[in-house]
Length: 542
Image (tube, rainbow, N blue to C red):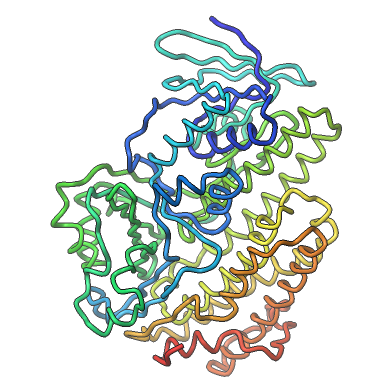
């Protein structure tokens, strides 16, 4: 058994673990970093992992903070945003479905990521930076020390037992959740949904699935819809198509457990039968290439929480802590935010700062609140997914919140600035409370308005508030400017909510709202945030 001392051992060399290792080395090159990973490199392209679609926080983290822009631009695919096709009476005909997406790329970029290709590149980068990457190894035991004494991590590699000691541990073991299980930190999530996904070794292009000339012409860049993360939306479910740079396509089925049983989709033949019933177009796209199936994975009740993710000498990062939902692709975002907080704690600890335990508790509370706020976006909302009008409004609201608050904090470098939270606690609390009530508003509205808005198109980048908030992420703000921006954004969200409330009440005066005080108190303001959404649904060009 070999012994050596490291500053940090990262248990798991997947996306979260490798990114954290690179981030550590970039900030403090002398740090002794050991990564213990079960798999050997290089991984296969289109690797057996989920999480290929990034949105702005994760994309910014990979490209700009970690310096992977050249790799991403040369070896991955640009992402033409998120594209939704809501339910209709003829789901096999795309031209009859309400479409919501983009005719152009937004200013703040996002990407489609072949995880195998990306993680192979990360492995090369961390090794070049001086990280000791131990591949083909399994962590067998973790002995946590107290009072600053070194932890002891025992692992097995090539049939031999080894031990490494370290001052810090990052658990990046994914759903194995080594530390969470050992410390009894597991926590259930109220959001209950299932998912299966698989890869087909063929480019499945949504543009080729519809021969309607008007539908094709509606997109200014002919034949490029496939670069989006495509969502086929139905009552209680959605189906994704994600293109990978290797030429493969990732396909997933995600569904509410109360509306669709996992046993109906738990293997490829059953999943295909389910698609024939619910999304026949998807089945038609896949069936000619079914012999090119590369893998199949599924999870029952995939969402889970965690009682604590940061402490004085350890952190849970990536899926070892908690997992929300694949809708809106938040996985990489929480890797970015969790890693940034964990590395902040590590740097301060290694540089001899005091009060790390107290700071860890504050950052833990911030990340937990972000998790809870995001959870409300998903919990009890899957039954709405076929509803074109409600979901068009929900997508706009959810992204307005995302760009206005968490993305603003991250892009402007204030995620770990605890004074920003302390000075704006009332602002953040008010936005969180408003978000809960707006999600309830969507549920009530859904019961009253279920028109499919057949053949309509909502062009997201042409909605002024969407373009404005997204482009604003690229402004160069210091802490003071960020605080002022966050307060403006909070006011904007309250105005958006007030205008939305007034619109829905005008359409449905019987809608009960008396028990939603934060929403009731909103003032609509003078700006029209929602007109372009309603115009798109009614076929009025932007």
